[in-house]
Structures are given as C-alpha cells and as structure tokens.
Length: 223
Ligand code: CTP
Ligand code: CA
Image (cartoon, rainbow, N blue to C red; front, top):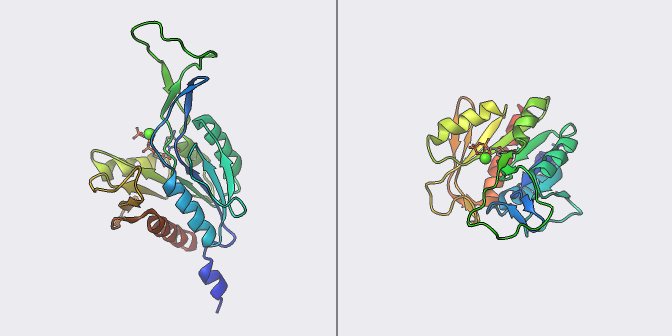
C-alpha cells in the first residue's frame, strides 16, 4: 500500500493561513491592536507542514517563531498588508484558514507626527478594514475556506451566519464558556460548524485542536 501518502495526507496541497493580531497605526508610535498571540495559527501551520502540505503563513505582529526552512512566513502589520499578502497567495492555494484576529476598524487618517497631549479629550475617527476572509469567499473557486468565530450570544446561529456570509466550508467556533479557552491560553474548546451539522470537541491543547481541524480539512479534500 501507499504508506507514504497515508502519513502525508496533505502532500501536494498548498495551505494558506493567517495568524496573530493586526496593528492599525494611529500615529508613528501608536496603534490599535488586540491580545491575539497567534498560537492557533502557528500550530495549524506546523501541523499542516507535518502532514505534507506546502504552507504559507501570513502573520501579524507576534513573538512566536517558526522554522522558515519549512514554512513560507510572510510578516505583516496592518489588516491592509495582510489582505494584500493573502490576495497574492490565494489563487495558488488549495486551503485558506483565517485564524488571525483582524481589526474591524482602523483610524481613518494616520497622523504624520506623534499626536501631542493637548485637549482633555481626543476622538479618533475609525473606518472599516477590508474583510480578508469575505473577500476570498467572493474569489473562491476550488479552494476550501475555513474561518474562526468567537461569539458571546447565540453562538451557533451567529457562527453559522458568518459561515454563509463569507462563503466558508466550515467555521471553528471558539467556546467562551470554558475556563482556558480563547486568547492567551494553550488550550481551546471548539465546535466545527457546517451549514447542516456540527461537531463538538473537548478542551485540549491547541496543537491537538489544530490536528482536529486539519483532519476535517483532509476529509473535505478527499470527499
Ligand atoms: N476576518 C478577516 N478579516 C476581517 C475580519 C475577520 O479575515 N477584517 C476573519 C477572521 O480571521 C475569522 C472570521 O473572519 O476567521 C470571523 O471573524 P470575526 O471577527 O468573528 O467576524 P467579523 O466578520 O469581523 O464580525 P464581528 O466581529 O462583527 O462579529
Ligand atoms: Ca471582527
């Protein structure tokens, strides 16, 4: 039998992944960001490579490192940069996994000089960023698209709406109710949501969550 392809179920597949936060500049020294560590995306990248895939990881600012001999790492800062990097790699990809915590808004203008502390209050006008995943959903041809969601109300319904709106194959819902799930932890409890069914997984290390998600993708690619 073909043990080789059995052990490398993603051999010949190109997997594109976003990870980490984005930083949206306010002025030369300040930005709007979030607490994403990028851990889930980096685990997905390493595991996809281990399963035989050719991996491109588009990463926002994080302290994490990865073996760049094995993984094509593209470092970006803003949502716009991430959008461009993903757009440039999308046509060639077989799978796109959007695990980045992308800013929804950015300052409408970036001050050229450091903003001085003058008035008692300061307002920043914000404008919507590009929705990277939704844009790829519109461009989608053969690609499998996977998104993440974290919802505080009507979790499954909201996640399923996102799945449809962004034209995804499935969406990974991060559970909020469990201790040790979400940002700044090494574990995650997720559900994988399809249009017509869902699978609930136990709380487990992000490395194992990555494997569960990639197993699901392998099933889709083989279907
Ligand atoms: N996403 C993206 N680009 C954005 C916003 C989100 O690619 N500008 C991706 C995320 O990486 C994630 C999915 O879309 O895989 C869902 O992100 P989420 O923040 O839950 O959804 P939004 O569409 O931003 O809706 P909201 O924040 O209002 O719930
Ligand atoms: Ca959002």
